[in-house]
Length: 359
Ligand code: NAD
Ligand code: TYD
Image (cartoon, rainbow, N blue to C red; front, side, top):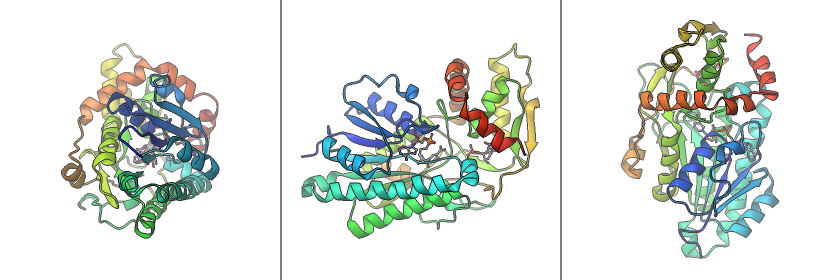
């Protein structure tokens, strides 16, 4: 019989959001958790050093597309829920190589759903009711907003514009179908852009921080007036925890920070914080390093989330403001340069060459 102490099976728990979810879980619920992660370039076990030896924590290196492996984990650990975060997550990489995004995000989610369905169908009725498949997705599935448009609501049509967004939209559709067709108790969250400690320095904030610290040009795509709705990653982890406990099967919840910022404003704020934290830096004022480069093809102009449903039905609200979240983030990167150096050696240099050399 499943209980509140039955484990969670988390996929992608060594990535940026996944590792914050795992750390939050052991700091709050503290019940057992199995972390299945392939450790691609984006996965990093260093993020999880503080929980690695906790009783109840199990790490398994493996691929979500490996049905035999996933079946074995479900059979052995008998989880009460699956929290599915594993994905390829960077838009620019999806433009250069969309195949891996379809394989991981679409086929990988299909394998997870099929394994979950087989496991769930064998459970007793009372356990079937308790079980959850929490699918972690993005606001990018809704496409791009114009300046005066209302923020994304859960009822909006999907209009993905990048291979990444299309692959996530496809995975969301599969999750919906597995609920409608087979009754699998799924919950979907669509979250806005996350930022915070331990984010791989290919995404805007950590990339800019890392380059600014070293006095390197800060690449601003196009006019820099694109808008993103930034949420501190710890607030997202908390939202996933409550969505797991209170989310209704078959429902979708939009998660966001009510915090729309242009890229120019975001980078300017980061630079001002670096000026403050590094008064002796030869690179001050860091904003001087901002450099316009060729725009991203199909670049979405604006994302914004209406998080009313999550607030009303899950009782969730972000704890951090952009100001407090950015301060924590900048402090963390300055205090953890060894982490940055480790993840930016080797293959990272090739990525920087591929994505930025021709811009
Ligand atoms: P990330 O790229 O930092 O981490 C992804 C993790 O998945 C890595 O640990 C990687 O090793 C693992 N992984 C990749 N392919 C795998 C496979 N085939 N099998 C097992 N593990 C595999 O991603 P993130 O930013 O932490 O995003 C996590 C999830 O949240 C994704 O599903 C993403 O679409 C979604 N999301 C991200 C954001 C954001 O701003 N980063 C916002 C909303 C939603
Ligand atoms: P990113 O962090 O890649 O997230 P997403 O594309 O999923 O929103 O980018 C955030 C915004 O910053 C997006 O509008 C693209 C822009 N951007 C730059 O201007 N320069 C960069 O070097 C990167 C990586 C992103």
